[in-house]
Length: 62
Image (cartoon, rainbow, N blue to C red; front, side, top):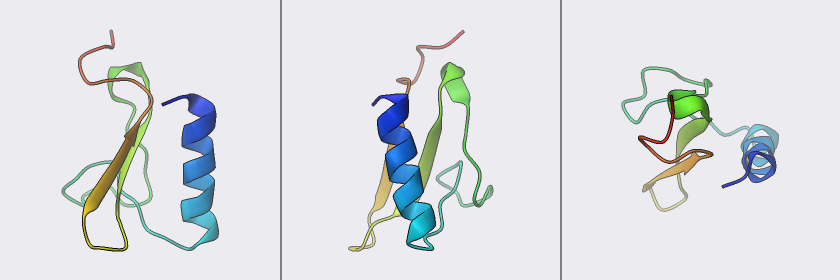
């Protein structure tokens, strides 16, 4: 996903007062991970399933 798409989704989460985490274990609330030189986050969807967005695929970074 592009940086612009990431920013749009993050903006929607913020505007809706939703919580997100930098990790799938809920240890880093309202933070963004920067693994592999990109950005990523996790949140719980309306059906209770975890959703994830990444700007760089796992293993693609420095």
